Image (cartoon, rainbow, N blue to C red; front, side, top):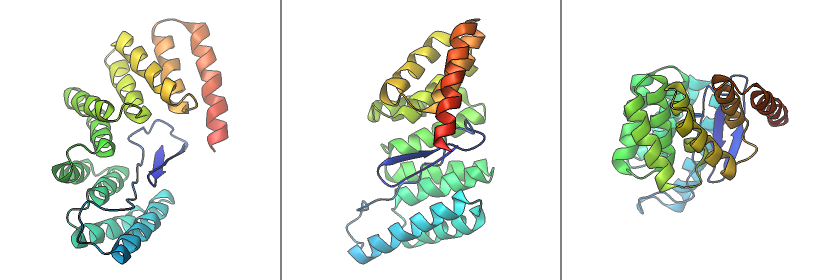
Length: 215
């Protein structure tokens, strides 16, 4: 699943819906963290990032990668761009490069929830569960209504068979975003793991309904 965003969330669910909620969180800043950029530069960068997001969304990751690399070359303190660069590398299965891009983003802004979520999710997919938990918990603590981080924590605990904790975080995620299909999919898996067949069926119906609406 990819999620492109300006500064408002826009969630686009794709075929492999939990591929996963590292999703593609592309953040376009209205004003960047340094005052040295002119308004014209800010607008130009925002347009380039939006264009690159569209390229990646259509599968043209190599072209998107070139644009984000150029932005980071011109604006070395643009942590948004490094976050998005990491997302492209992740989409291309270049995990080491993705980690480096995320780490660079966090070296500029250690409290940026989007990158904390993304690097946490990537660590989870790589089997680094302890690191994943640290980053995802920090993301959710800094931005309490961050349903993506909450859902990812739920998935992390589900993978570890920590079912009670998984339920807690998945329910918290639904409180913030009741119509987020991936959370219902994970709840279905959780109910199945606990032998709750009726509850699992209910969640699967909700997941299918919401997933269809998102297409």
